[in-house]
Amino acid sequence: MNSFARRCQAVRHDIVDMAESAKRGHIPSALSLVEILVSLYDYHLHFDANQPLDPDRDRLILSKGHGCMALYALLADKGFFPKAWCQAFCAFEGMLGGHPEERVPGVEATTGSLGHGLAIGIGMALAGRMQKRNFHTYIILGDGECTEGSVWESALAASKHKLDNLTVLVDFNGWMSFGPTQEVGNLEPFEHKWNAFGFATQTVDLNKEPEALVSALNVKVPGKPRCFICKTIKGKGIDFMEGNLDWHHKSKLDADEIAAMRQSLKRSEGHA
Image 1 (cartoon, one colour):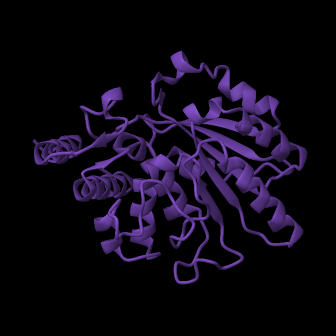
Image 2: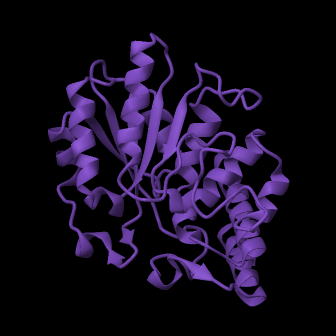
Image 3: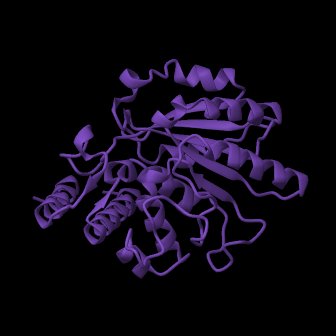
């Protein structure tokens, strides 16, 4: 494994640690986000964890808020809050809930009700332009989330205002809560749709080339918002979760299930 792969694997272990503490979570939806978030937080986002409200910071909105375990792992690692908070994930007395809340340092918007993150991000990008600030706004959507009409209403606004300080990333893991995305709400031709709505669009296959997004994000298109359709695997790294709808959300996880997750992660690392 190269350093990028090892980094992603460490985040996946952190996700399993949170699942063990809470005995529940949207684990597969978090696992598919890992390469996207590592690419952003390790290589592209400008921020100071000691000044989480710095007006010149880049903004990241996790619109598919149910994948927040991956976000929490990165925020804790970067020093936005103590790693001990992750051990109280979904606990009554804890700070980290099952969907992101703005009260948490590093979380830019409360999300979970799908279809709203892009609109919020557009407001931030417009405000940044009006204030003559140079920060960039990133919004992560789920593929199933893109069946929401509000996503496309927002996309129209982003292109109308030529928001080249805004980037959409779609975690295209192929699954919705009720089944395969292409069966429940067929999005194709997906890349052409985003192009038609005025975005500079590129599909990156993070299954074949996990680091592809790192270099792809370097390309800016003046006068256009960007959209990266990221091909991912729901449940990546834990073989019995990959493509298994039964694991979309699990509660009352037992010790055997947690142990099986850890063993599967070790197998994906090349350990028996």
